[in-house]
Image (cartoon, rainbow, N blue to C red; front, side, top):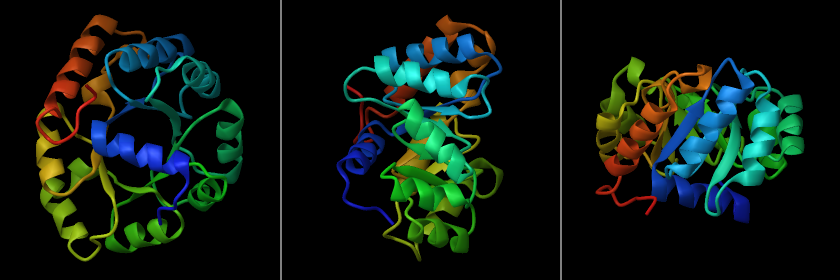
Length: 221
């Protein structure tokens, strides 16, 4: 359940304004770092680096130090209370979970905004009560997509939902129209960049995602 902390409010404001959170999941520390810098430079205001990425905490620490004003860098696949402590030490500014986990309550108690993974109505309500700032509907694209999100929101109108999993640039308007405050995007945005792939193509995709939200009441510009 969202609190009143300034850090949490900044996170929520950025989600609602910019709509798109990039998910960096790679197999190379250097590539993940280069990917994060490129995303931030192209106007993606929220960058999540998953803890499954080699050297993830070092990547988060460097990106958090160098990030432009008005952006945030956080950690994904955060499952344990120990993970939360590590993210705090690295300077991470929010955490993301794939499912209900002990990290949700731990992050909330530590003052870190948390996008907590859930799929069912019961899971969504449980993580919201545990302190989630945003409930991450995951995997959003595996089931009913925007229609399923709308069905979840009908009995839970006070919960802020973010759609994650299988969301492409063309899907963003549909999820926003269904009531999502934003979306989290991995492969369709990051591609192979975090594994040493094409950074020029990454920048082009980032610009396309930024453009996709300009008419949705949220824009990085």
